[in-house]
Amino acid sequence: MKDPPQQHSSRQIPNTQALWDDAETASASLGCWTCVDRGTCGGAHKDSSFFDCNDYCRCADKASCDLVCRGNPVAFVARWREIDGFDLTTARRAPEISVDPLPSMVPLIEHNSARHGRLNFPIVAIPLYALIDLGNASLKFKDREALANQFGIASEARIVVSGVGRDSEIERYWGLPNRAELLGQLQSLGIALITPPNFSVLTDVPRTDNLHAMKRILLAWVEMAEAGLPAALHVNARTERDYQRWAELIAARPEIQSIAVEFATGAGRGSRIDWHVARLRQLAAVVNRPLRLMVRGGARVVEPLRQSFEAVTVIDTDAFHKTRCRKLAYFTESGKLHWRSHPTAAGEPLDGLLQQNVATLHSHHTYLERLHADRRVVRSGQSPTIAKNGYGQSDQRGNLSQDRRAFGEIATGSKGQSMIATAKSQFGVVANKRAK
Image (cartoon, rainbow, N blue to C red):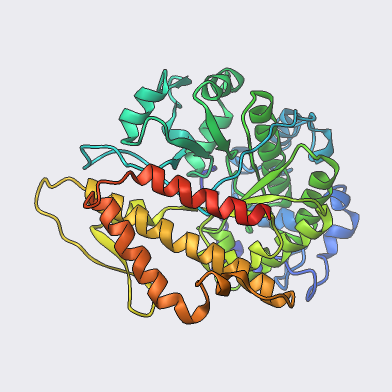
């Protein structure tokens, strides 16, 4: 997003976790009470001794600061105008684009390096910035076949496009002059779902920088929906007030059917992830209509999120990255998912290892979705259907072992079956259960 600001040594913050906002235990900073943005921002609540959030800008040369900060008034006004102010409600209304159901897990595939064939799986996620040439402001692929060749995926695979990326990538995307044209070309490729860039909402910057980032996320989502793309609004937030604003906006705009979150970086650190999960569940309660959720990172908090959202889909990065590190996913006899070293010979392709890891992770997430659904039924006081179907807790080990063997045989081709057909069938079972 931005270059690290030049810092005064007296203003350095060794631990940015000290700036986690907590309105329950800390009052707003003294300077917040007279701030013109207080109604939008809600104030900064933390134990640190700052007069207001403007003190978070620690640049020695304010004129060179690239934060959205009043310390550099000329740049601040330009950034404020490019988004038509910090108020989310001034963003254009978007058309309502239906989003088809997605499975519990979608593997992220970044490239086809060290592979010779194609991944036999019915749906994959691809980074937005791998599809667009940010230097030439053009789409890298003219058709689905060229895209499938480049990423080593099945030609008929459904595509989820993830806007999560490095700050340098997402800032370059925002600077593209022809985003609408590029999004229209993406729409012609038959995208199942896309998420907008996750512009950073940092803790150690002025709140005006956060407000600017959140408005850009919304505007990017509107552009995607206007291009006819099914899009999930990425929810980035730093404070309680941020979540309240997102909830108010989503409740008032039924065209927002899906949202996305990312726990792989800041929001997933330490105990803060539980704080974010609690606010997301409050958001779902305020919106009070079915919402689907795309999650990247934070596997341990998927179960509580499934209690509040109609459906939760995990964009899984482990299968791809662990394969690159020559790791193999497997289930222990107790049904736990583990990884072990799987060295390969020099020049040996990784197709088989990736296929098996994707199959194992798919089996794992499908099982967890069923288990979470069963636990919700138990908490409601009803009899769990999972036990009637042989998926009770006492049978966990046996069923996971069977899944492991079945998916291993499919991945290696020992049964000569199609991974796509098998996965589609299982996705259908999960979707039907949810519909009931």
